Length: 400
Figure (cartoon, rainbow, N blue to C red):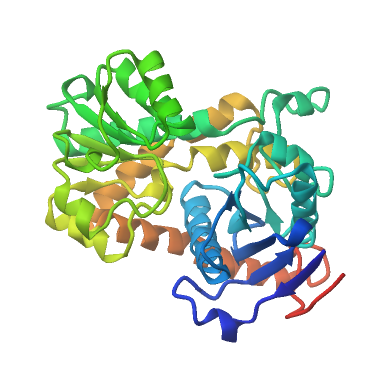
């Protein structure tokens, strides 16, 4: 396996570059290319998933891994985790090109960071893929629970999607309370859900249990069939029509960039609160939503249940637990439920500061990981050789 660390001079050409600590290009099996980006490790090792998807070219993949890894720094900071942000992308079609050997090679790629980057499943990868990666590195989480039996892990591990949905549900409750001040509850509201895959369907179930009416859209017919089977009374519309339906809450739970000039103009909702990453196509769409009097719950805040889930598994597995969390499932679930309070805090702060909610969340996250930089600097000075660094960047290089 060959890899090259990309230099800042080259990366400055990308709009998503944000002084990332390391961006590494890998040549994996059968000529498939992958990238791992570590954005920031001020708070701890960089945790973020590994996705596999087709990109039109390498530049598009690099820009995506830069954007996603930066988002993980902000997500982990506001989730209250002692973790930094990173991400991995494999350039290829997961339906036709993914093999066990490819995922093992990706595990070796993760291992090259010597603990500075910890991976997990993401779009296009699965628990089974994490198992293959784990044959080459210990820095992988989201493993099947049965792999943890007999290792005193409790019932941690497994697919984080249900915890992501649970965190979103609690975030929705906070947004409803903030917007309507107790005058409406979910039983009075209609929620349009864009994407009823693993997370979107679980979120829809939780909302429907509280009496919400659900309108759903998805590009995959099997997802819609399952939604109709498990939700019962659900209205199905086309993916293009989901933006313009009459609803109270819009829950984006598909791929990123759903909120843009064209789609925001169609929205007829009071609240946006969903599980998708990078929902705003451009930063100015945050302000555009304010101008339309739509309350936007920042995506990386409300969807952080999954990273909390895999984070707790990593803390137990690695022994890295600087905040002395109680590493068992009950405490993990309680941590996920605290997303509701974080959402409330951001919505109140945004109101007090007269700022868009996305900008407010960014400011609060930056305060956390910049404070972590100061603490990290003190630790490095007092323990220069204590092994507390999570890997190193030796500059641009090519190795076998």
